Length: 285
Image 1 (cartoon, one colour):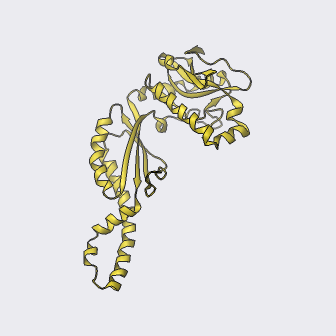
Image 2 (cartoon, rainbow, N blue to C red):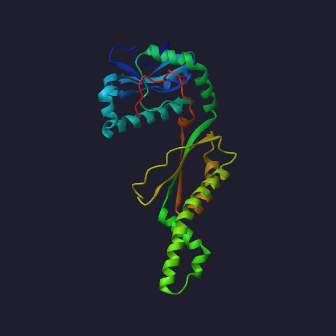
Image 3 (tube, rainbow, N blue to C red):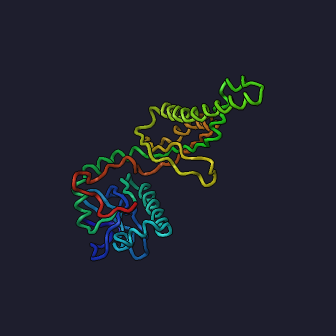
């Protein structure tokens, strides 16, 4: 395996290689600057036209009991996860990338080279696709109360509620229960509207765990979270299709946000995904 871009050394006891992504070898020079520490620079290991962007890390910080403790420590985990994302964005500007999830470690350069040799065809094919595709995130936060109120107000039976306070109260409670059920149905219909609006643009779609409640808007809860694989340069077309729909959906309490482009995390192949094999020496997160 040849080296470029200040590649990490061959490694020694207690030191592993943390790998951020794979990319084309010709762009390996973009891997510059420090890694997780000033003493462990970002670099690349090159094998048959592919580059693994990596840096050395002390294995004891990422594995065993200490690694498990770090995984639960937001103060330790947060900055490193953010740096992982920053490296991917840096590399993405230089070449298509196959992103690896946070915490991908190899115990030696030899183990990394073994993976590159075994998975070269799949990695190369993914990079060829990634040259023309990119991932976007589409999230929807729902204000359940606002949605139920909108469904209730749109029910024609509301205008026919009896004048008598007692009879009106009982009927209104029934209509509000119907509105709560109707709101859930409406959210499903809204998702179907989105699928239709994005038809012909989205190459692939993955359903992800809904986003958590917004700190700034605690009344809103996660209703949808999709990973969208789009052609490169589709930002304007995505906005053109989403904006009018987003406006109508927000009137009923569903608020959309699209972010990207990202490396295609959710569409990357699971390397080494055969019985008894693992791509990573150690994965955190």
